[in-house]
Image (cartoon, rainbow, N blue to C red; front, side, top):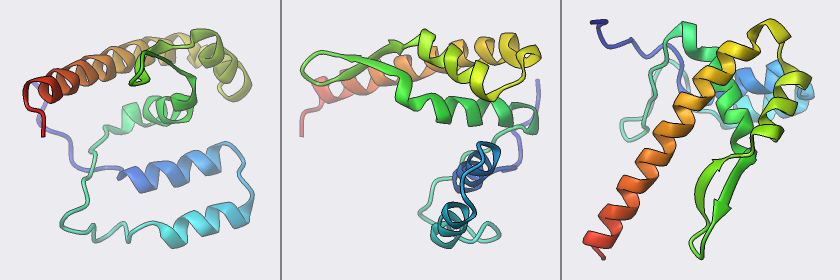
Length: 129
């Protein structure tokens, strides 16, 4: 079993890298850097998200594809990815040779998010505040 990964990337670092990866204008990247907390010293109350370096691209793509969630119900809960939109994003922004691996990783992350959403919904139902 692998040991827990060190915090290689923080979420703000990932967002800035995603902006760079997708060719955001320099002023947008500079503004994001100005708003991002110092990477060397995260605030005590700021959550960090350790990501294995091997998974960084998949996480960046997952974050970039967040607009492709399909929603349903009065609470607009997530139901699944719009896979046509995800594939279109991949074709526009990722080399074809990486599509299969990225799709596999996205399927896993989609399932994890939907499971977490279901747990949160159950918790809210059982513990109304």
